Amino acid sequence: METTPETRARMSRQRSRNTEVEMTLRRALHSAGLRYRVHRRVLKEVRREADIVFGPAKVAVFVDGCFWHGCPEHATWPKRNADFWRTKIEGNRRRDLDTDSRLAAVGWLAVRIWEHEEPLLAATRVQDIVESRRPRHRRP
Image 1 (cartoon, rainbow, N blue to C red):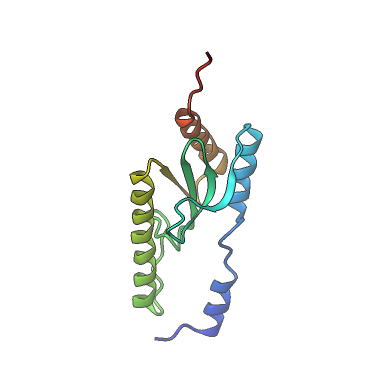
Image 2 (image 1 turned 30 degrees about the vertical axis):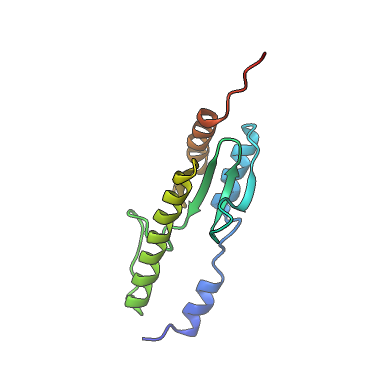
């Protein structure tokens, strides 16, 4: 079954960057005093970007959409073109796991935030993780 032009148009309007949740999360992290980079490739050999990157702490934050990444709480399986969408979403899940394991192999921690999470609570979680992983500098 083919995707309808209406569905194709609706899906193409979905933002992949600078979503409302991502922007709220970034504002909360910034106001907490944390500095970061946005939309960066952590591993140069892999074409995958983290939404928020804390370099010295080696933390890569991904804000995942419930539909696109198959949220266990909110994922929906479309009835139209069901095989296509199941393959697409399951592929996204596999890619996310692969990304997380590749990052872990080189000392990075991938933090996944679902779009349905309260951004301020997510920011607190990210802040705690970043602060716990920051390199400690010794004074002479």
